Length: 419
Image (cartoon, rainbow, N blue to C red; front, side, top):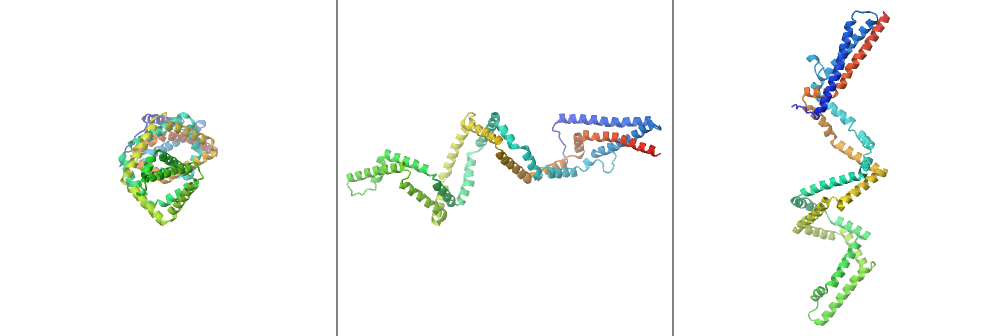
């Protein structure tokens, strides 16, 4: 089913239409002038004979080229001459040919890579980002988009995502190899020392501030037959030693207890990686934790708190998050401008992305050409195409008139000399 073509810019189409009329007038005027000259010099000899021969050839060339140009878009004089009105009759074939031409010559991998590298998109982007107004604009637009996305993300959607996507995936994925490798790297790099220091500091503070609680807890384990005075002295001594022991570990980074903890964590990492019994216990612990009904509620609460804090930071145009974003964008722009190696990598990534997009979606993109042309009405398509290229095609008629006259003059000259 054919559909009518619509104009995206009627004013521009009117300019094209006027230009086409002017060039047609010029071409017709040359034909009329040649005809007038031919009639005025008919049956003459000498110099006028040469003029007559040139005028006659000009008319032949003008009419022949008029026929050729007109035959592209319609039947000349309305006569159904074979192989005329090519565009209305064969627009589907032209559309497929245009599709193949674009795909082979404009969307080829080598062409895309060359154009992407020649464009130096990374250098242009860096120069653009260096301008504070531009980097702020990017940060503002990114903040607006992120804010809209976070605002429209409902709690029900996040709950469903956690329950239907994350938790089943975590339950299927073995945790022991990941946990063992991570713990091994943490122990090797000493990344846990800060957490140990924090735990020791908090433990020392708790022991100092909660002596009565310590006494009650330890007192519950004291023998019933021991005198109360003796139990109180023993518990007080235990509390004092516990405070001193924790303080010693906290103050001494080389304390043997710290090394013992490192050995324990290292052994645990090895067991998580290689001991089946430890791996089974870790999997059971993971299942109990992930299967707890409070987990989803806690995750949703953490998400709400994070989203609220992030939205508040995004809404503040002068907040630290926006300022940091602008500063990082400007710094990245400076690196793009100054670091040629970074430019090469960025341009290479851009070219790879463009080639991937073309290889994946290039056929669908070029198919739009043939599908769109197939849906056009033939006569309307011919009128539209003629409107765009007809003005330039009139130069064929003009050149045919002039060149035909010169060729006719040359032929007449040869004939006269031969006679």
